[in-house]
Length: 241
Image (cartoon, rainbow, N blue to C red; front, side, top):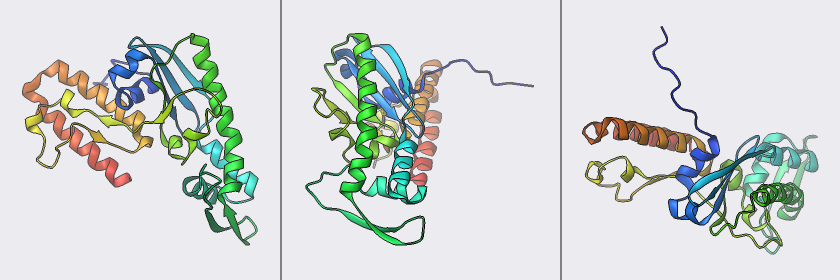
């Protein structure tokens, strides 16, 4: 017998936004773009309310594939290049040695990686701007990038190049003070939230929204159970990291 039924549906970018930006930024107008593996899922807030959700078919794997093809290296090596060199400034010289698809040892510097990644990054930025322009919304808080793809070094300096758009990166933070009494936290947890890696934005948001929903349903007298689930989740994430 099926005991658990789906009771709510939550858009992934809405979940990411719930742990990536605060309510003040949503009131002023903000875009949260979650760059995942296959797509970039975004949401636009105006006056504290979501007014547009969008999906762009560009994600972290596409960046990696561009490097793999452009440099003639394996996908795994391209992923390493993306993480280590990314879109670092031309002013600072960085290079690593890797093997190409023929087994030869080659040196890849940040200029090569930058030129390849730049084209796809600018394309992604243009498509995000198209979504913003379609809403005719003034973004007092600008654009925030999260998700695993946002961890490419320097991406925030390139994606909206030559456009007057405020842009920052955002790591997900689970604000446990919204769902737990502060007195229930452990002594070493003297902060008001758990800060996680950007790649966990969606799953952290889904967890947070569900815990908040359960907290509102069961009340404070059983919030110790929520605390226990939250502790398990954070421990699991740290193991993955």
